[in-house]
Amino acid sequence: MYFVGSLYMKVAIRYYSRTGSTRDLAFAIQEQLGVAAETIDIPIPSGVDLLFLGTATYKGRTAREISDFILTLRERKITVVFFSSSVFRKSNHKDLCRQLKSAKITFLPESFYSGSIFWIFNRKRPNEADLKNIKNFSKEIVRKYLG
Image 1 (tube, rainbow, N blue to C red):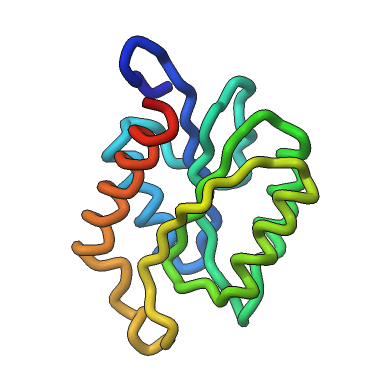
Image 2 (image 1 turned 180 degrees about the horizontal axis):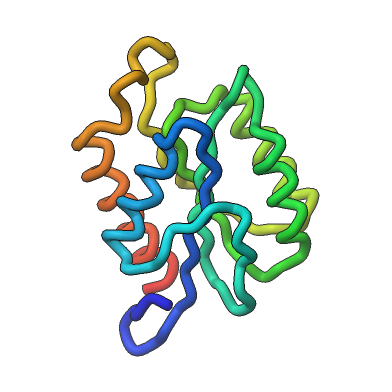
């Protein structure tokens, strides 16, 4: 739970990471918000208002594991915000949004991406600036939507 004003709002952080980069971003959000960052294998408890969902693009596509996870959220009263250690191609972002719409899940227009469109430039990402930026991003999202 996360204390916002005079109310407790439930915030969850879930991520899928093959290389550890998205995990690093999730742990930065955890540090900022004081909410445990967990893999998508851990079910979302009831009553969560806001879900930070971390994913990446693998071979130009959304990871199947993320698509399967989205199905577990079907028709829950939860709002999702994406973060990623790679720069989604527009088609990937549209695909995730389509999947959430199909599952009747609300998602925010804001999202956080730390990488470059060129793989070679992502090798040392996320860097310290990315970690600082995602902390600020997560703080602002909570303030804007739950504060």
